[in-house]
Image (cartoon, rainbow, N blue to C red; front, side, top):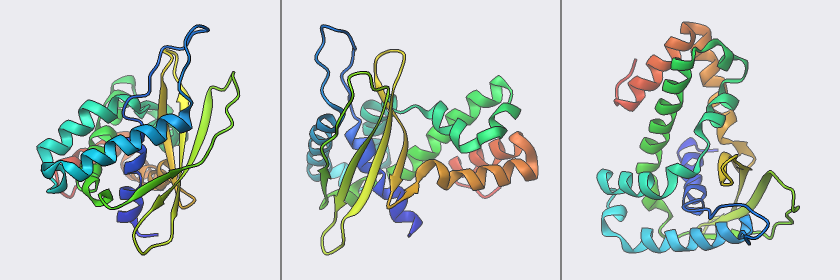
Length: 210
């Protein structure tokens, strides 16, 4: 699969998680994750189609949209832990914090250039059977692109301790976003340790080759 499309195809996930509602209690009726994904995806597609700065790929505007509406609803720490596997334990608390921040910045840079590509797409969210006690769910969707076969995109969400659903992985056409980074992360740690991985991520976020 084309890596650029794989990364771009995860944008609906970010759009879909723009604002999961969220205090969980016996008295609160929480919107089902699949209904939430469908509603927010459609709302965000309206923004993508109507905001000229987003369509033009204006870095500041796209970053503003991502920072304000999307990033708070991702579990970046869990994503990095899964991507690093056993190597996560080799990092000091300070390195772990910096790894999470650099990974967050890396995704922002990736999505900043991909957001406008979904202007002509639609999202088909499949119904979800949710257990009342569920702490983790997978929402199955399809990205429907003009003159192309639908692409399956699965979103893994976890119910956090603060009662909010957050995304920790996306599977596009059977390929996991987390797994997509795992081999690269492990190779970087093997070559230069955790500090070497941090150096690589920092360099990418600055737009230079380490």
